[in-house]
View 1 (cartoon, rainbow, N blue to C red):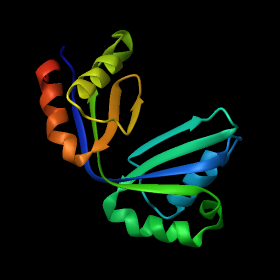
View 2: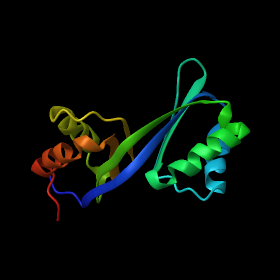
View 3: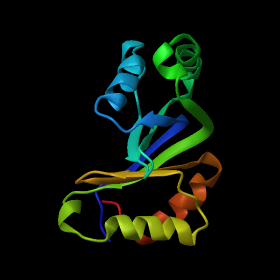
View 4: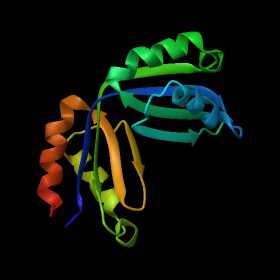
Length: 153
């Protein structure tokens, strides 16, 4: 299947914030703290749990890790959440054009990674991109299987 290209971002750290109330403005409040420190977010997802809580995940360049850790220890907003930090992450993805007009691309992308034994830590998509976070030690395995199926221009 022909695609527009491959996205790869190395040296990422994932932060997962749990115990967020599922309420308007919670994600914006947390993300504003990070933005005020001029830290770029490479990946963001949020989901609601059935018990009224939400989980917010974001990945940053590992070079910004010390700055985020300082924010966590110094900022009252961030201190109220449980925060899990996962290092050695890489974002890998594929992009269109016209992905929204081609059903099943996300399913195929995810299935290929699973068949190769690559564990997806997080996944997100847009109308033209499907990407996921994986452990960097699985990157070559992921690229090998994706290149076997998806054709780059």
